[in-house]
Image 1 (cartoon, helix red, strand yellow):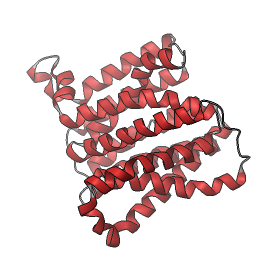
Image 2 (cartoon, helix red, strand yellow):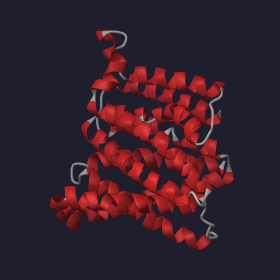
Image 3 (cartoon, helix red, strand yellow):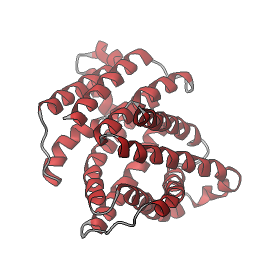
Length: 287
């Protein structure tokens, strides 16, 4: 059961990271946090290269790295902005739409097609997303779905889920042309390099805050790198599908922490909706 302990640790770390993002966005903007997180994560993961064989980089590695780095850089910024302007207990569960979009993008990019369990999982994700805004049903049966579209943070989160559904396929290509650890370090470092010019242009007036609060971002990257390390170790012990499925339970932790720490409202329907969405993700992952 060591793999489960490691995977659930990753899920809890992911939810704590979301809450930490929400609180730190009062001090730093999304560009500084996104660039710092990815850079320090790659930095603290780098010592792992001493314990693995350097993989032979395949022909498709560099293209996959460029595309994944660019797409994930955009996704990081959009997700942080969504967290900044909307309730975390709404934004985080919507990211589970990425497996739904994967059922469209994967056949086109890597030739993988869904099975029956995957289709059932899609329906559960849609049902769960409906329950996230169940309070809106008084305005009509389609109002919960409209609430996702009308709320700016929800729209950004939905866009992030779509971007992740594309980048995940390139991540798979990257791993196939290198190794999981080597790819993780490479893609995090690439994202930070891509975001750096944006930080210098958009956030140059806020860089002075790093003198007094920069250590928080260093610790932030350290925690994220430990979570990634736990994920890699768990993957070595059990099927990837099982690890990722457990990791997705971070959505449930995030909703609960959103209530406890951030005092967000309508927690019951959001928790139920998130739980159903996670079960949908589980079916898609197993399929």
